[in-house]
Image (cartoon, rainbow over all chains, first blue to last red; front, side, top):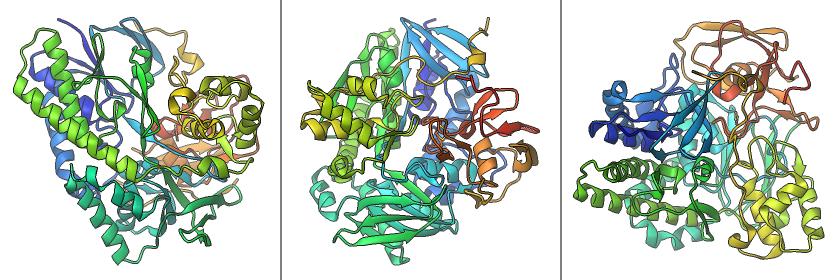
Length: 455
Length: 101
Ligand code: FES
């Protein structure tokens, strides 16, 4: 029997596993988290009583269905939670679980690695009390904790009002929602919104219910600084009309949309192309998610499409993998899924355009702003390196000179900022700017694990 | 170190109380919580950055930024946002052996 390995147990990986299991094969499903669901559909930790229905609103039916379906097959697959894939060589995966290193040989690989927040620095963004928007949501959904008593949400994302509402419903004061994009940008993105008006309307209704309950909403803001002495005390920004505003708060959620976690696809040999429109390097794949021989990509880790697209693309990748292995597949179902994925990803593209990160950010960022959180490298250091460079600057060269992106997060947090600074400095395209490559180990491995190998 | 909590429990807990220590002080969390949650419900800081005097308390909460490392007294490095709290953990905000990579 061929070994099909799926990496990531979010909606895409869960549906892929289910599809393969229903075809009579036993896939290996590897996930770093202890519980399935990914970041968006994660179930709360045990003992923490969260009303997920209330928290997730209209999404809660899909969430429940996904977990219900997964529960019905989980005993007939090889599910390995709390396991990190940290390297891939030829057809071998290197994993780490509970401090033990092991290898897995595979015939076919489906990568459903999900996404993380795309963040841009501002002075003070490393202060305790500042979290990513996704992290702020996870703290609530997974741990039943709020990141503060009086919170500001800042950035450009359709999730800003959604997360604000979730916090508000649990009694947390939302001091402000600050959107760096204006209304105009959202209107111009409308043509592609019509692909999935339901989602768009849902977003608007969140906005409406916040407005009704008098939460201060600011559009077209410019970040100035997050301030505090060892923890957040408040945030300073310019309003859309250029007025300076200071808002006291003890927690800040920062987010400028999502960015795929592509390190595993990178190690598995996917080819990447610049998407100048979204400002992201994305893996090249066909409409089934095929990115190489026996390599398939699904979910937000391949292209941001949201949870519904993740479920559909997970099924699609599994069907394509099965048919390449000679297992019968329903072509009609495949076509249907292809259409769904295409439609949903087009909608997300529209959203990403409407909530584009502020382009002027790189110019105005103060020299003493930390860009690389891991090694505390400042904007000024990067500017100096750029000014000294004689050739058109490229990500990996700037990384080598400044160490920005070389830290233990492998540039997950600083790459968007570094990229924006280089593009702005050299006035060049994303294609010319290049990208930071995923390198093994894709996440730090404890030294103590190095010597131990599972039988 | 700032003793005012950074995080706040806003839903009820059914889990049992789990005692642990952080920099020598006895604290309590709940089963089901991560180390990060348990510490930050009592304190405002997880650690001091090795490269400066900056204080840090995690950022992504999804095992990506690596900005939430703490150490056990016997030198094991733990990523606080993705490691479940367990009974009697003896945690430190700085590595006990400075040579730890
Ligand atoms: S908070 Fe980012 S890895 Fe733990």
